[in-house]
Length: 634
Ligand SMILES: Cc1cc2nc3c(=O)[nH]c(=O)nc-3n(C[C@H](O)[C@H](O)[C@H](O)COP(=O)(O)OP(=O)(O)OC[C@H]3O[C@@H](n4cnc5c(N)ncnc54)[C@H](O)[C@@H]3O)c2cc1C
Image (cartoon, rainbow, N blue to C red; front, side, top):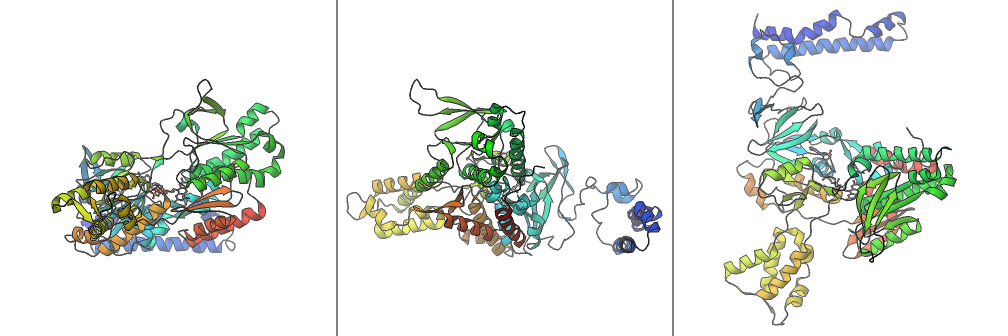
């Protein structure tokens, strides 16, 4: 018997088996007793047989014609005596590495791991540069949406097989919108750029080998090679090392968090309404404490207020009046401290009106299962500064920190000095590795040390003073290279005049040093927002599209000629309850009220990644307006 024939027999064995034993015994039994009623089912069963036959025929024909081994053949389906298993194969369940330019396995730190090069059936882009994208959040999705097909063999790796519209997560905690309306399948988003999705978590990157070590939900590790790697894994909740936070508080970062908060909210109300619940316990159950007065904390408190006063008041009027309390604990001296002071004041006023207790200048020191302990700053001597507040639900929203994966990557590169995020240059390339890019919450763009740059240029040119024209040209070249400095270097004439202390129409070295020192101090990192991640993803897509067909040896040179990333601030929104939102457009331009609320909703509808979620969201808003939010608990 030839190898091919033996191979064919091994492949067909499960199909022969299916033929000898009926594949759907209960269905066949039912069909024989009710033939007319089940005519459609009979047809379906027949179709299944036809499909099975076609698959068997197609597989056999493909093998006889000398095609590659189909990827669904597992090691068990081949007999020991078969010469075909002499070649190394991947463990059962993993696809066979079909791109022969890679070995089937690699040894990493004494572990032999399979190398997976093909995902899914579509192999049309194999052989093209491999673009691997880690994550399926804002950064990754925006990149995928603008990436053109044909340029790369693109693989997306993420533990979540959907994109989550995070800005509306607080609305999902009360049922203003349903959780599913905030999700879009990442497989759907992958269709246009012909990307392949793999639901798994990136564990590590092996830089020398240019492979990502990935771990699936089953705990098995494998390697995915890349030519270009985009790290868009976001960040994780930051517990600030406070004891008890991980165990006893709730976060609001994932869709599971929002669902859990929604269920627990109703659980607490139902428990509080039991006749056996003491007054003290009722007050604790209905005490909602939010650690962190940033946008997430404020929006959650405001959503809670709306839910309590628009819906729950109809079902629990007595306890709502007497026993419910909402408290925000904020370490700074005002809430929404990434917004302007004017916005912060409007929000504080609104929260006060809603009887939401805002405690500023306070740090949480400990959390247990039923109470939070915080310490007030700047308390006059002799007065107590430590307080204990019982809670039924405590939301922890005090910022973000590095994921373990990101920390591992930082640890591998000497050039990475930032302890908060991966440092990238102004073209979003990881400092220390030219093949890796990082975007979104896991990345931060390095700020230039302007003073050092200009001093170096002065030395090279043997200059010690600048006329206004020279100043314009030096600053212009810095802004071209580091677009994030533009906002601080826009009004050049007035800058020049302000720092020209002796008014002699030239800036000497001391004056220049003072000017650049001040600008250096003002340069801050971009905020960790969806807006930044989305613009960075779109920037990389444009870059990858234009580099797709550039010969590999020319790519680094061509890439350097492409413009650096420029962030355009479109404004920050925050919802503050009772159909009121605030907006901060930067440079002192702010607004608030019902009009901004409509703008906020309109902007989020427009920002949806698909028509499906746009429609679902609009229906949810109409539904909760007409019928109120659903208070069922399940
Ligand atoms: C409640 C809430 C409200 C917000 N509101 C706003 C707002 O109104 N406006 C605004 O601009 N921003 C808002 N943000 C911030 C915004 O959501 C983030 O800045 C944005 O999600 C960052 O995008 P990203 O792509 O970096 O990360 P994410 O969107 O968090 O995506 C990270 C992705 O990486 C995946 N991942 C995680 N670990 C791994 C791994 N090891 N390997 C592979 N994949 C991995 C995750 O599953 C996820 O798909 C809000 C955030 C929250 C939590």
